[in-house]
Length: 128
Image 1 (spheres, rainbow, N blue to C red):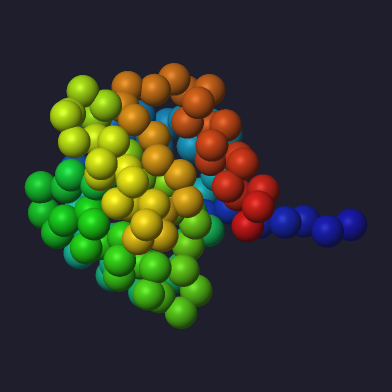
Image 2: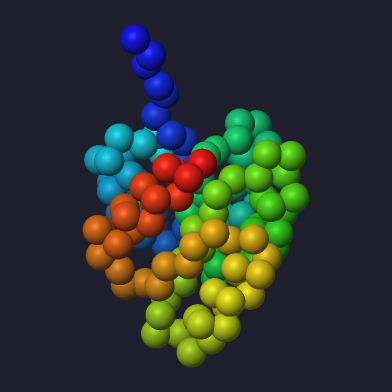
């Protein structure tokens, strides 16, 4: 009988309420979740112990999300990555296109439903 460990997810979100919401949703779905507020902290955590998936806000107030995305994709074992940003922001579509060109696997516009978020998360982790 094999006992598999839960998938590990790193959430990089500078908005404390969103970070908490991501944590609640992912923990409730059985994932091992680590939360951080900026890209520099995320890169440090990833170097110590790689994750299966990274949820990354593109418009971080500290250590740009695009810079973090590029550095994550250059890691020896790059993670699957979902990028997020507000859909009400004019350049969101352009940012998502750029993020996909830089190696993001999925893009999710805020606001979104829990079902949309968990559906994309499950899909990417099943492919991993």
